Image (cartoon, rainbow, N blue to C red; front, side):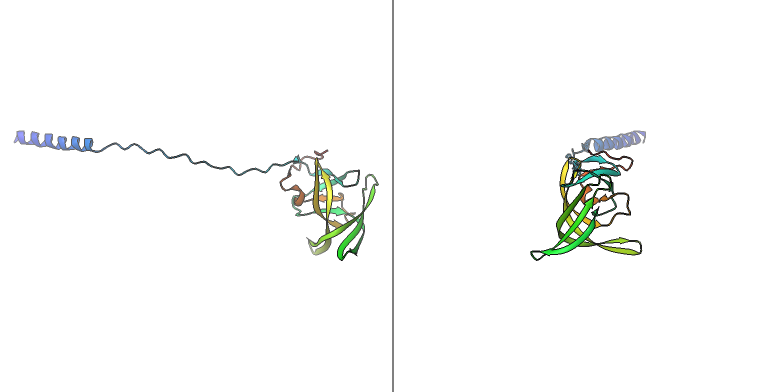
Length: 179
């Protein structure tokens, strides 16, 4: 009986060893590399600008110091003597800009692009929007501005996202970074 039990144990061990030999060791397959594309970062031609910056309203020679407002969708100008009229069947507007610091004045006549409504707490103001040429930093930009009486405001020009987007990053701890 002892021989039988030895034989039986040897048989079980042989079966176990042959089972181990029959199983092939699988090597993991190489997973092809996946290229992850990073979103393209916009090139900000004006770099990092501050909370207030000089802007030239062309063809005027002296700069206006503008409030940079990332919360404002559109830019705005302080004008006086605003008068609408018609030219060749189109709506136009005439207005004067006076630089409070230098006294330089210029009379503009521009075609009306559209009208916009500025919403404030308990108040809505309808404004004319015109396209203006401005020099901001090293760039000459043609962009839309709403016209308003900003005499109660410290800054005569407000630069909004329509000028800032893709051109500048704003750091409110800085001022006058553009020349």
